[in-house]
Image (cartoon, rainbow, N blue to C red; front, side, top):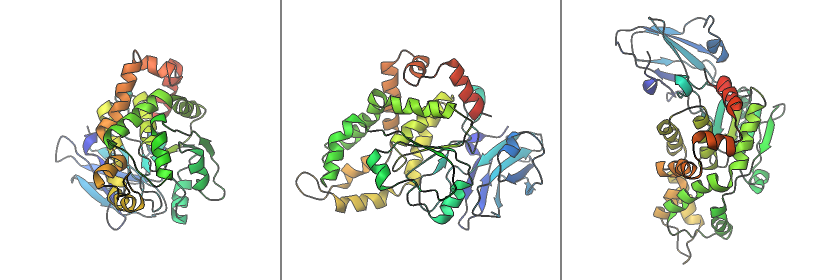
Length: 340
């Protein structure tokens, strides 16, 4: 069997795909197939013509069209197979656009690639980006930004893209004074890490109706879906964590997905920008130790959400039914739709 923790697709410097994997026996030959349509592989039929066959544990696969997303099917000489794709999409105008596919969920079944995405805002997409996103076939976009954020930086995918744009504003109550300070050009936080933990706990305490509505929208049809906010890390991070949790992904794997934001967001660049743009209460530049905890993600932030859920609900089932409005039938529908 393929070791899922060692199966990855990344972009090489020239834009080609670096596909890597691991099998129990080093001598096993692997055949690699590529397609623009993941359903070709999920259907279980003929995967087409292989792009290569090798006994190595990685392969560089030329990208035939950088305006299209590609999916890969790897098959060992013993008949075992695994479907892979890039976790992060190579877009110029949004740095944190990711696919939730591939994680192991309920009863060992893996999340389907090309179905569930998470990202930062979409207002700065290039024309090339918009073409790539349009070809993903997104039919539902859930926007967790506040209404003013949505108005100032609207989602722009270009003419002819048919999708439902759902406004689900998430505004944690604990962040109101902080947001007002930002409007005044002041960052006034004494313990930034604790502030972020409290913000995440507030998602569970006061923001569940928006996330419950997200699931109701998912249940309305088998539609490729994107959830996003401004940077795609906090509001979106919790939304993605809920989706993965409902589909049976282990908490540690959910935390690992959450932490990928630190890899993809330009955190150091943002620290420099905000340090010069804002002041503290005394009028001095905001120090890095205040900014960094607010701009990066940490395990304790998302774990604070799970701790708050355990504190407030008798069980996961109680949480799903009470807070997310998901009964057993709804849960099974989601698993059937989004798991292999």
